[in-house]
Image (cartoon, rainbow, N blue to C red; front, side, top):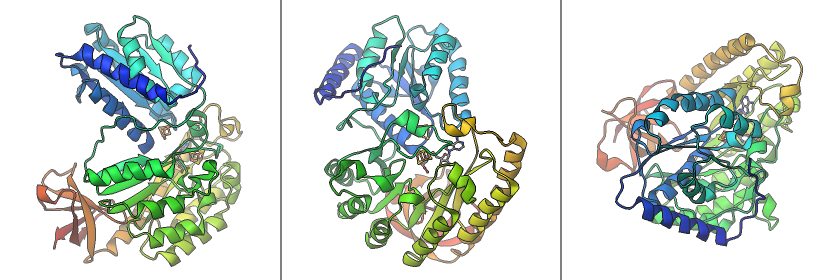
Length: 468
Ligand code: SAH
Ligand code: SF4
Ligand code: F3S
């Protein structure tokens, strides 16, 4: 496997733009199509928007159908085993298509590729894959694709570590109203169950001026909402060592014209400062929603997880936030069945859920990730126990979510209209500032607008309302 040291001179971006031009010339007069499937978190989605931007500049058009495609790309995730299995399933299914269309190029990139054993496995098992690259050299995609098109061999280029941040890559965003803005890359926390720090590298923050510039452009283009992304946005700026902080960034972005709403994820309880809580209260555009993963309720398990806070600290934090921002909606991530989790430990998780009364919770079965400390821990919990705890958690959370929603019945709330509802094309859909989905009877002219609706029906996961 070819491994390159990661240094990114500024001129590299220009070199890539040359490759984009070269491919565009080759593609002239041909209607080439690509399909791009993204797994994992919003940061991967945002990376895929960069790939889509480069592809569009190269003259490729997007298609939903693999059978129509000249190029198929998978941007992968490895946070849990089932994410990886999905990718292998797709790759296996493409063997036949490649046989029928030898010119088809199949590429895989993203977090899974940062694991050398995965790349070896793909090389051996899925010989029809022609291009493999990682998270740190995504910006080199045009050059790598050019080489893959012009070579009979599989091109593999994965960097072990990250270099400087690459700005000004083309982008084609999926949505016209809401945009993702990655503000930092990587993670330094090394929670003992988590693979992300190994595949995404250390924390690197973009400069305030680059972020403000991107958000101003979004405002001018008509975007109304931005979500700032990072594995732990609370530590944004710490690596810049110039006093830059996440709270400071929010104050800057609050001034950007055109943008009406600002969201962010994810926050880490150990780094959530008072400054940030007050910035959330004082910045008009920052929405009343905080996603603050607890992961587990037992302080003993939190310690084993290397989360660096206790149950009490977390609960105090939640109490303080509710006092300072009474309208705040709270959501979380929870892992059940971490190694050594006993019934008593699990009851502590249920206790946090019932004390905080989250509006929603993303719950996960613990998944063993090779290379992480937790994978080597003894007393792994059986699948059966994990599933049973997961079910109990879900039932409690569903009841709380519904009860929280019931408090909104009859109230008038502001929503930002997204478009037609996926589940019911007759209805339109939007979100409250607290990130709750509201479906309503509307029309195309409302898309992208902030409107007032009265809530007249409650469900566990969504609300229904009428425009007033
Ligand atoms: N940086 C964010 C999110 C990272 S991944 C944070 O710290 O909150 C999203 C979620 O996946 C995590 O919050 C965690 O709940 C879950 N997760 C991560 N590794 C996991 C594993 N090995 N098994 C099960 N869930 C996991
Ligand atoms: Fe993973 Fe923890 Fe980093 Fe989140 S903070 S990405 S859970 S190591
Ligand atoms: Fe998955 Fe990578 Fe995100 S492992 S959760 S896609 S950072």
